[in-house]
Length: 324
Ligand code: PAF
Image (cartoon, rainbow, N blue to C red; front, side, top):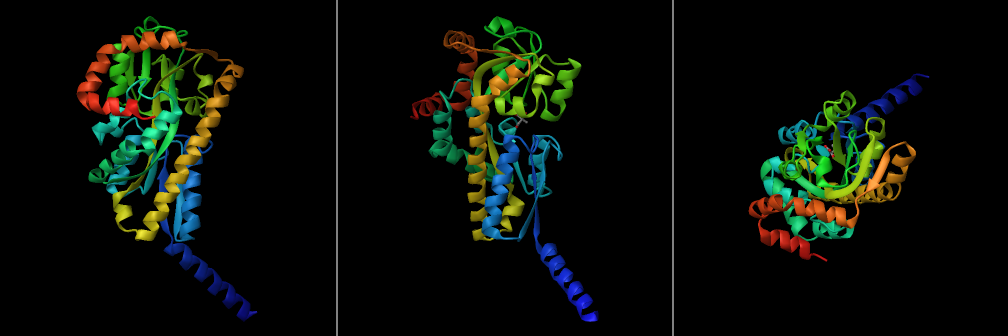
């Protein structure tokens, strides 16, 4: 009996020691576990664990549990958070040049966007975060952004006049909606659903992956499939945490992040195929912009495009447009 008790105690000490040695990796993200963020995080964790065994103890913090995206990135810079997946919303505050990917109607379709991000332009852009205490390990994805609101359908720039539209804290998006005559209201995501509920804003814009997984049909009547801008996101690791990893573990985190990005793209493909119908079935009024209506919006954006060309360089915009 004594021997059995001793064995059990020793066993739990060994298990406890193994657990105590596992390094905690906190991963924060804005949306629920059942969203594309959850899918990306879980695929990242699973692939990294397959290569590193039980040496890392991953703990997910979904639904903005660690704060808004800017706060989480600052947590990575301080080393209080090890990893995150964030939208392009606040990234220009760290690396302004990344805002080029936020230019409206820059990408023709998913194939174009993915080819640019996976190619030399996108790969080089990720390296620019190194000077900011952040290791950008892979691109993820949200989809093309669409407008939802409670005022009415949007078919032309005039329908946006004065619309209190929540945007991300993203200068490129803000400029676009100002140019179109809307009243863009930048706001961190954790405040958005209650602001829509209370009517302090009329609408917001996000891809179907977000609209569906955040059940925006419960607080919004109209969905306009505008596809006005592509929305990538990025999988990050804190430089402080990264610098303490062996080369093999760095490789495992990096390859795992690529798997996470691919899982997000697969989730987005499905949301694109099914999301609009799901929102119709849930009672939303859903309309898709025609090619002519999109052209009218692009034409109204002409002054903003002049500004983007000055900020990011007409050459870079052309190089992106030329990617097949
Ligand atoms: O609109 C945003 O802020 C982002 O798209 C969201 C919903 C936080 C996902 O990253």
